[in-house]
Length: 190
Ligand code: FE
Ligand code: FE
Image (cartoon, rainbow, N blue to C red):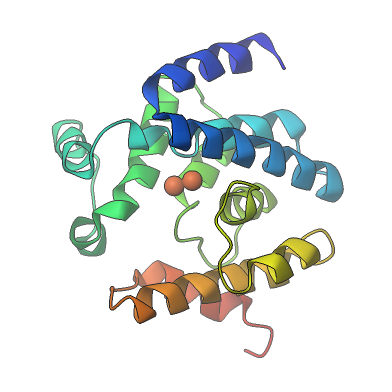
């Protein structure tokens, strides 16, 4: 682990609650395994994994306040679904607090919750790593995604997006339009 990464890891371990930190470390190493498999940059995968949830250092309410204060523009849908806010906020913090300037890392953090159509390899890696890391509770379809992701990452993205849409709909929650677009884009039958 390089020095910058070790430094960020120390910071993150202080900022995040224990469970969130465990999840973060799971995402970091899952992302690095996927990077090895698909030939992505290892350091970038580790860094993006380590920082992907750094926006969750405070409550959703405080995350929105921070965004208002720093002119981070939130969409209608983000304001109505505060669980989404940490992604955009995380990318901002990564850049301004953790001194990450690499646009690939920043966009992987930005899109880790909703995905987007036409993701970069690093974006897909972080999106999937967040979904499948070993500490994730067993949910329907998870073991299938874990077993195919090292053969077919696009299919894994599709199944994850579909799983998210289903989970939200079943819970009577609204679904961000970007998640729906991700699901449609990666649907092999489209
Ligand atoms: Fe997240
Ligand atoms: Fe996460």
